[in-house]
Amino acid sequence: METPELPPVVVTCGDPAGIGPEIIASAWEALKDELPFFVIGDPGHVPDGAQIALISRPGHAIHAMADGIPILPHSFKLPATPGTPSPANAAGVIEVIERAVKLVRKGEAAALCTAPIAKKELKNHAGFEFPGHTEFLAHLSGTDMSVMMLAAPGLKVVPVTVHIPLAEVPHVLTAAGLMQTIRLTEASLRHEFGIKTPRIAVAGLNPHAGEGGMLGSEDDALIAPVCAKLKAEGMAITGPHSADTMFHAAARARYDVAICMYHDQALIPIKTLAFDEGVNITLGLPFPRTSPDHGTAFDIAGTGTANPKSMIAALRQAREMSRARPDAASL
Image (cartoon, rainbow, N blue to C red; front, top):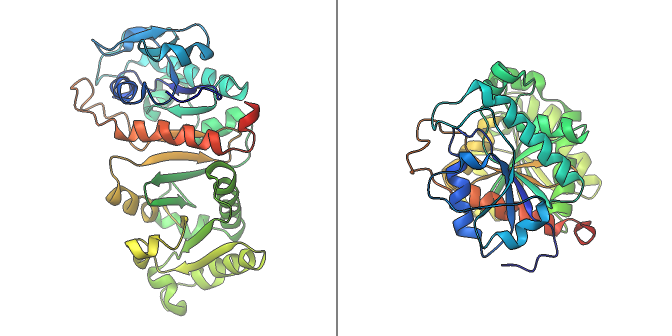
């Protein structure tokens, strides 16, 4: 176990009918001698046979790790049935997230790692009004803008537009939005990843980055001027690049993050290279937040086949980010 000069990482339970309880239990087995974390959730939702250690405050997790999964109890309405989400438990999922954010903002946790939620279930049964975790966490922390990053060994990607139809991307994409995304990403790489001078590669929107206007005007008219302005300000930025040449090994070695124009442009390469080890990171929050890069997987919940690698990677990433932050010493 590391020297506990930082508080533990707080983990939200996610939807208890999904694979969250299983991958959290597996993560404890893998990390119990490496880094301290605690879970907010219902102890009755833990998989049969898993060791647990009930705690009454976050700081107790540091020593409780040796005895079992440290759990800060949060009662849910009903027991969990793997694979079958309960409408009565939807409010509890939201309450756990709210409670975790309060703890990390108070400094009782060094970072937040969230297990998967079922957004449709929360919307239908608990009045959840947000597209997902990212937007809800920004709301809870009073953040004006947040950015989704996907990270894996050897590749970090940031999509400028996320969960919108592909046909809407050219209309939603703006110079101001692109510039904000790049600035926030560059600052986060310095402050949360310890990269002194981040190297940023920007993908074009169209095939061959527009081919001089033959395949679309957005690359020359919108993306290139943003890159030029930021480069003139001293940022180590290149682009727009043809996206089909950006993700082979030699290309990836030339940058620290790839800024992509839409969801699949960013997620296809990272899920191809590291399907089981990708981590979802929210940039722009006043605290580090990570999550495994997959959903609740109701179809395999309770079968014991869920792969915990992404959760393990998410916890390690949360710890690394909390250590790299300039304010780490004050936590």
